[in-house]
Image (cartoon, rainbow, N blue to C red; front, side):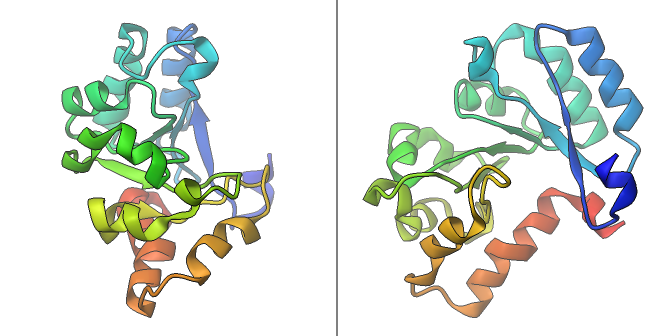
Length: 183
């Protein structure tokens, strides 16, 4: 309803690995609507990874429809290796978490959403994330409306990123992942 009222708003199609048929129906219903730019799931809510077999039909459909999927990091490496044409956005990936998932550095189909909610050095060290995965895979994210965007912007203010780098993170990389934003 919000998307219908405000053309500046975009949404995700939320999927549920427990309700596969309903999720596939939602994908079919909304995937051609340019106001829906991707898919979202929180697989740890179900105590499984995105690589769980129950996600496979959903990931196949997402890949066929060229819709990126935003998810948490559980199972991301195995899923990204299997679905190489699908863009994954791993939520809340900080420098600290990237060290735990070093293999992500080698997976070009995984973008990094750097939102987070606490003031720990490993959470806010955006420069190290960029150094290890490259500027072209980092997306600005604020986890809004749950958390103020000022917190997320603050992570970038003290960095020595160029205006060109900031433009990539705040805008250009987002357009590469979500081509529906250009429609």
